Length: 315
Length: 169
Image (cartoon, rainbow over all chains, first blue to last red; front, side):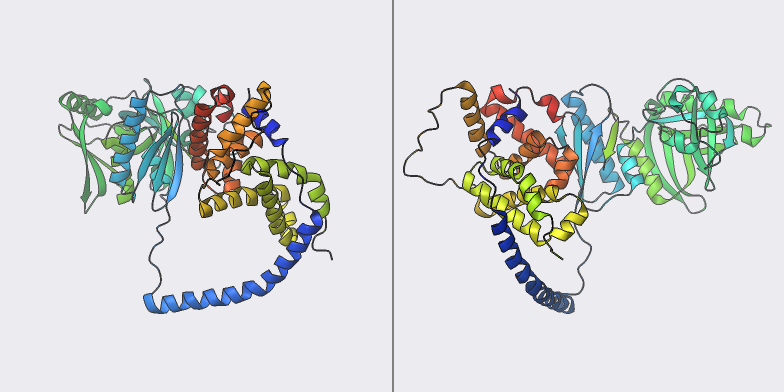
């Protein structure tokens, strides 16, 4: 038996409609009262507010909380343990980013709810819910891309190969940044965008040489000369991968610096790309003209490991 | 100019549908009539503004849904004591009728907000977003209230809500 049909049948027992004339009489009376009542109440309230300000001063920041539904976009029904793990990771990220009184609840099998005191900006929500995959890759080629080409690529860019995404001028950084389901974890080459001095740059990137599993830990550093950075410490195997990558890219050091760049890619975005000036046997220090908030966001996304589920924030 | 221009026609056309919703929200004839009347009075008071916004019916439904929740908040979910258990509920033995009475009783056991969510989502066939706008709450709240309400209904009358999981998504 369908709930809708049963409700419909139950509604058949509804009583008569109230008399229109009676409704209109009451409305006229109410309207008359309203016209007199509103100004009086308004004046009274204004007085109370003014007096309160005079005594206590203006109220400090409003503590109204914001709620977001975070939907699982991975196909199929996730098992409860995976959902719990996702919630845990989101909480850790939220704490590191510094969201005030962040709470994450599992609503049902495919939805989580984020409640937070102060409304976070879009970049923060992205850092919170992005997959959190780190790959380090050799830069094969770079090209600038106009923000407003004549006609942006009409089809699904994810069906193009990485090389074609790079070659096709109408595949803009705007389109590449909106790709769904690309988190850099797929094998093979990748085309991704980053920004350099405020300009969008499109990068064609080689297969990943270093991944999440190579990372031992991450820390935030602030060098007075170079600004905010994320320092990556590698595992034993990861150190080999990283050092080998720098050796391979550096070569004999005589090539054009632009041709010996290494990119740090978070999900499907280049957060930093710079020329390798020597074989690096230690940590990687990732600079990218970051603000403190940007560097913290990257750190939060990467420090606790990638999310086991793909998520999207519903507004 | 008549500030209530078109209001009579509106009540004539949409009144019965509004009464049905009110009855589902309250489960009681007297309360339903009072609810419709007070919602219509509030609507008529601002009739010109409401019609210029485009959808007077949605406005009335919003007032009804929220007023209902307000009553519940104010008076709590008290049971009204009666001297005798009313007769007649068990008289009609036909299966459909028994199911309806079950549903009426089950609905009566839901908190007002959950009841409102059930009526809006499954009787009015509103989307989660529309129900949220009507109740003035978040989509997340609608989702959680719906799932809580369905769980309770399913517990009370397994036969009736068994096939609503697809509808709920």
